[in-house]
Image 1: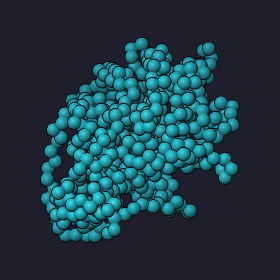
Image 2: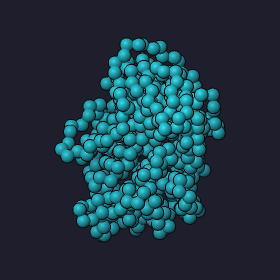
Image 3: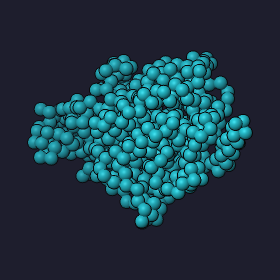
Image 4: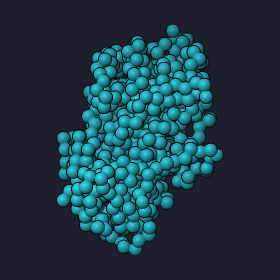
Length: 532
């Protein structure tokens, strides 16, 4: 047994060393990638008129915090107002990888879990589901989400599984959604579930998520079959949690699988979570929790062995962040254990002890202090510890090497993965991920007016929320002062509306429930639309 464990450790170390030698790290680029021959054409609806320069300069009022406290029931019906200026700037960089990335077949790169394209796109897609700020915006935000999901179907993203399945399981079957491989099915399912929570159900249609190996071999799937794959593998597994790569079970990847089941059950009335939740409790209690209550990050499905490098505090907090929706008791316990035992106060800063496992950025496997700060901030905000979250934000600014160029703000000291988590932290609030995944959108978010189109990047949407009848927007110019046209949808056909913040004071919705509104953008700009 000792020899087997030693061999497992050597294999893990060799793989880690190989990734270090072959990594392609670095900060996210602010310039678009070069054009690719035969690149798929990006189709998107645009308003009838593009933005044009305008000289009217407007004052930028000071933003006031949302009066609803963390965790209040009002939060799900009234998105957070906090920090919309930062969001309007940083989303430019986030959407650059979602809108432009699919056009060029490229985007930000992350090495997490060893497969850059898959991991990068999965994480980017989850973070564009800005449930807390813009639930009533379906324009380029929804387009970026769709592009991230559709990139997951590119063979360059999922084709790794054919060889991994061959050498790891001695099976030749390129189908990435058949057996194991939760690092694809769990990520993809959660992306679709978060998209469908606020948008349409196109990915639930038969064959909407088809993996094409070649002209003769296609693996048709949909949101439903992806969720069924997760359910089937959990039921069949000895641990209920099941492998990402052959043999290796990662708890953080399995949180995405559980979230896939939660969102599918909520949206489609299935009961797959109920079949596995007790088994998951037993799996965690018997195999994936240490005696002190900390989460075990990885375990060999064949040997039962684990390795401590994947049990560092940053991984604990990443797992807690995504586990909060389905198993909040384990997530909260992991947070408080790490907060009390690992997070150290140093003056007006917080941080982890100086160990490799607490300083590695899994997006590029480089050591530094910024990624740990991001995960402290992200988990603290999700768990409702705003004091620690604000303190960690100061650490992100100090260690992350922030860069602003061409309207894009990012952290040069973080990988693409780290930047995505930093953005998500800014947009999140207490229990934000739990609310979106486990509880979804209130009915009036699904029926009220929406901002359906705005010119990108000229119009940066910082806030868009509806109460079922009225629509409230906060917009910022992305490329300087401009006059632009936006399209509003889901209005009552033929009804008259009054508008504050537009060039016209009122309008009448078309017979299809749409309307075009001209707006002058000279800074932070509020628009309010309500029935007469």
